[in-house]
Every structure is written in structure tokens, then in C-alpha cells.
Amino acid sequence: MTQDSAEPKQPTFDGPPLSLEEELAAAKAEPEPGPSIETVNESLKDGLNRCPKCGSTDVQLRGSTGMLVCLFCRNEWQEARVEEEFGLGEGIDQLEGTVIASGAGDIAADAADQLTFKCEACGAEVVVDTAHALNARCHWCRHTLNVNQQIPNGAVPDAVLPFRLTKDEAVEKIREFASKRRLFAHKRFKKEFVPENVLGVYLPYLVIDARAESQYWGKGEVQTRRWTEKQGDNNVTYYAADVYQVARQVSFTVDDLTVEGSSERAQIGPANTNNIINTILPFDTKNAVKWNASYLVGFTSEKRDLNVEAVRPHLEDQLLSIGRSQVRASLGRFDRGVRWEQEKLDVGGSRWVSMYLPVWLYSYRQESNGMLHYIAVNARTGETMGSIPVSQPKLLLAAFTVGTFLEGIAGAILVAMA
Amino acid sequence: MTLDLITALIPMASDDGAVWLLAAGPAGGAATYWAFYRYYRNNDKSHQFERDTLIAAQPVQGGEEKVGHISKTRNSDIEGDNSDKYRQRVQRVQ
Ligand SMILES: [Zn+2]
Ligand SMILES: [Zn+2]
Image (cartoon, rainbow over all chains, first blue to last red; front, top):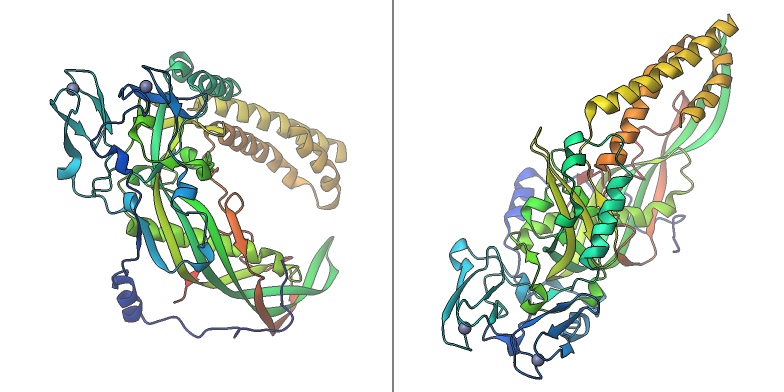
């Protein structure tokens, strides 16, 4: 990265911020609808996913290969990667406005959750409740009916990243994670810990490409002198410094920024353990394939409930953070540090794709405070993170013991010096 | 960790009157508590999207202008340094 910090190219200060009225007006302005990427998998629109070789609908994901397998004739195949199919890797530096893929459209109200499919095999009508699952079996002929058709209610994502880690591998990861944290674990958790209860879940994400420019203004200080003065028995160190008004700006693109599409998971704070799920990002989203609900057979899935507009503030926050990390290296001369005071973001363009990402999830509700703890395994990379309920009395006792020990040593030093 | 604390304490005790050494117990206890709590609960962790996302940046631009001088301060650093706290939002201008 090069920089032109010596000669200011930009005005160092952009004037006062807008008035409250102007800001409110800007915030209320309707976003312009951008062009869309049509991701509907046309071959699946009757809700049946047939084996291309024998026509059977008994199809599911084979974890070891990441491919779909026909349980009748053992034929294996897979859907095309969305990256190439829809050109998602290209043209990020030319993105304009907001481009939303068809599966990332707004979520419709609950009324659209119930979808009725006519089973093509036997003619029965089967209802799939898309609020909870995106597939069901015909109760007469056992055909698997999938919500493959991308009905415009946002229930069906554009793409899915198939599971790769097997359940056994996930159980092993979870057991290993927990066994390193036995000593202070809550007694009840230790008794009730059964990693075999792990569930494979597809969680909804919005995967975003964006082109942005961010600007930052603040103060930076450069030390000019450092000296000590004697005050009574003590030496006190003093500093002198030059103060600068600093401005930086950077243009950048991000490829596949991944943001939670579930409102429950997007709330990250001390009151919950949602950060655990967030921590196992990133996924190899470049390997996501075109939507086909057969990838979901044997797993559960959670429906996206955040629309693009609701996620946009998260995106802007992350872009501002990314810009800050990009300009960090250009602040070297300010050896006393920089305090950013103002920042500005222009998103030139963004492209949004809705994607299901695979997670092995072990969850445990702590009885005493109702907190939901998770151990989550990224079912592509194996990255594992979790939250284990702590036994407060045991941990406090340990802290107290260490404290007492240190206090004893401190006392001994004092006595020796006296 | 405990050992580090002790080795840090011993030389420091000699310069500054040493009564503050008595804070070693409570400080060490609290540090122990938080270290283990974090290891179990991981509530400080999150996805490092600033680092683990594919980012292509143009060269950084900008400038600086001397606006003042601090002739004497006891602070070794600027107040409110947030140059490493990428996620700490500051005033947003339009
Ligand atoms: Zn077949
Ligand atoms: Zn049927």
C-alpha cells in the first residue's frame, strides 16, 4: 500500500455535519431499487427434485463429497457454483446502486409461509411450512417435496453451501472444545453434556459484495520531547507533543462480506451468546451452489427474517471498520496515537445474495439464568467456538486462592524491605 | 501468568514506596477470574471481518496539518486513541 500523507490532496476538514432535519430527510429517503440477479433454479419448479439419471426423488446430500446422491441408483451430481453461474465474483469495482439477487428479496408476511405442493408422483397435496422447514415428504408415496421454487417471499435463498464435515467429526470437535474447559464448568452442564445431540443447521446469511469510499478526520500527536523531573522522592516523566489535524481516505472493494440474516442471531451483546455463531465465520462462500432443497435433507434450517434494508446499517458499520483498518498503516508518524473524531462513508454499490451456510450446533440452555449457550462448528472449515456455562463458586474460589497467594508474596516482599 | 505478575512486581517495588504492592492480591485474583471466564465463555470473540474478508483497497490518501502544541503533559499517549479500535464508531458526517 502506498500513501501520499506528505501532501494533503483532500481538504483536511469537510465542514460541520448536516443539520438534524437534513440528516432525518436523508435517512428517510427511499432507497432506489437496483437491478436484480435472477437465481431461480428453473429445473426444480414443480417442487420435485429428480435424479437426472433415474428420476427418483429420493435425493440427499452426501457429506463426504458435498454432492447430491440419489439413494435409488447412487448417481451423484451437484448444482453449479453460483460464483460462476451468476457472475458474483466479477465487477465489484463497477457496482452501482443496490443489486439484490432474487432470493435476497424482502421477506413476505407470515401468510406466505404455508406452501401447497401437488405431489407429482401421486397427485396428493402436501403442505410445506416454510417458516420451519423447506422440505417435507409426501405422506402417501414418500416422495420428498422440496421448496425449490423461489417463490417471491424471500423464504428461499439464492444459494446453499453444502455440509462438508460429518456429524462424527463435529462431535469430536465439540467434545474436544468442552473437555479443555471442564475444571470450572457448571456441574449440571458437565452432567448433561451429550455432544452426540449436535444438530446440522443451515443458517441464513446475506453475502455482500460492495464498493465503498470512506473518510476519517481526527487528531494525531507526535512526541517532540520527553524528560523527567524530580518531585520529592519520585521521578515524574513529562512529554511535549505537536498536535495535528489528520485526514485519511481510502477506496476499496469487499468480496463476500457475510452478515447474519436472522434477527435473533444478529443481536450481539453481553445479554446473549450470539457472538459464538458469528465467530466461526468466514465460510468458503465461493463454493456455494445454486439453490436445491435436496441439500437440506437431514438437516434443519432457519429462515431469514432480515431484509436488505435492515442489514444495511450493519454493512455500513463493517465498511467503516474495514476502511479504518486499511488506513491504520498510514499513521506511523503519530507515535502518541490518533483519535478519530469523524467518519464518512459512500457506498458506491453493493450486491446482495441470500445464502444458507452449514453449521453443526450443540446448544445448551442454562437452567439458572435461562441463557442459551452454543458450541458451533463451521461445517466447512471445522473452526469451533463455544460458550460453556461457568460454575461461579468454583471460579471465585480459584480467583480468591490466587489472590491470597499473591498477597502473601507481596506481604513477604514488604517485610523483607522494611 | 501468576509467575509473570510476581516477576513484574519485585523490581517495581523498589522505586516507588511499596504500599501499593498490597493491591497485588485483589488485582491478581480479578485477573485470574477474567482470564478463565473469557476462556470458558468467549464473549469477547467475534469474526475478524477486517482481516478475514477479501478486500482490495486503493492507495490511502490524505494529509495532516499542525494545529497545536502540548508543551507539558504527563500523558504518554494522545487521549482517546482509537486508531486500533476499528469498530468504535465516531461521529458520522454525511
Ligand atoms: Zn437415481
Ligand atoms: Zn406423493
